[in-house]
Image (cartoon, rainbow, N blue to C red; front, side, top):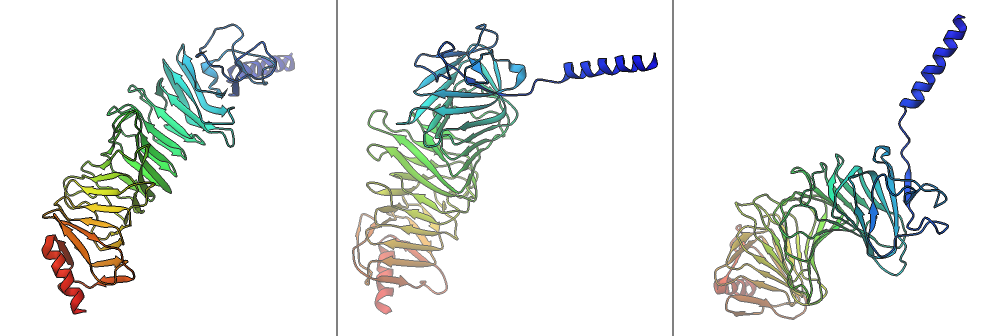
Length: 418
């Protein structure tokens, strides 16, 4: 009798454990046509992502052999194949572990838009799966979750809902984070940072103002997106840029217009090279904050002249070396600064303005054996030539100051005395 009771008790315990165990999370694939055999990618009209209806559902774990509804409590991963610019509209609040994208279009980049209602991403992971095809995603639903958002193998990502309340950083592992909502912030909780790992940040459709801390790793690109149709779409970065990466400022444009501005009162501290390959990069840090902490390379963009313009004084660190290449122009705009070294290639322009002062420890003129130049309205242009000329500090041991016409004459006298 005792043995029989023990067996019954064990059976009941085993049954209760089975009932208590949650369902194992799975990866569910979207099947756009549940009638046609095999897995079908999304079509052209908006599709509905919901729980409970229709009876059969469009989700499958066996490539379309059987179908099921979406169940939020299962915390499954959604794998969505699409071949064009399509919309997935949330009819109810959706909870999903992660989103995997498969762009089936072999000839171009396509974007999936996830719109309406609330999307809770429990892992925060959004990834692309198709080698050689460029996946893009716009999250227009209100995004929630506690693990931030991490985009991997995603060519482009957009966050457009100002009600986003997720916590955790936004991480771009490659690709570009596109800021589409003008001055509005769509990056979740106040403490969330933007982390760019060999990735980019771009304005899109309007002026983009970013106040978040941006952490850069590897080679990172900031782009002002502008074309003949939409006009100027400046990118303004008022938050601090930190990390160890190299940062390139450039344009996505048909006519090489548009501007990028580094503003705010917190210093940029990233220690990589800053490359100004944009039509216009403006330095506007306030309160003594530093806009450029490392070396600055001006010129090298696809077309036209690349300009770095001061909108306030003391923007570049005292230890920095500034290189002005043939298509580069540094405009002091009547402000003053101190740097370690200035190197100017033939064709590069240093514009001091009428009263600007740039103090340097060393000045290198590449392409001129003689210190020759023109001076018009405060502009000093280094002319074409051959060889390299280096000027020593004036006066010893103080730094060399370039200022107005007097500065030009001082340089000429020093060259003649050597």
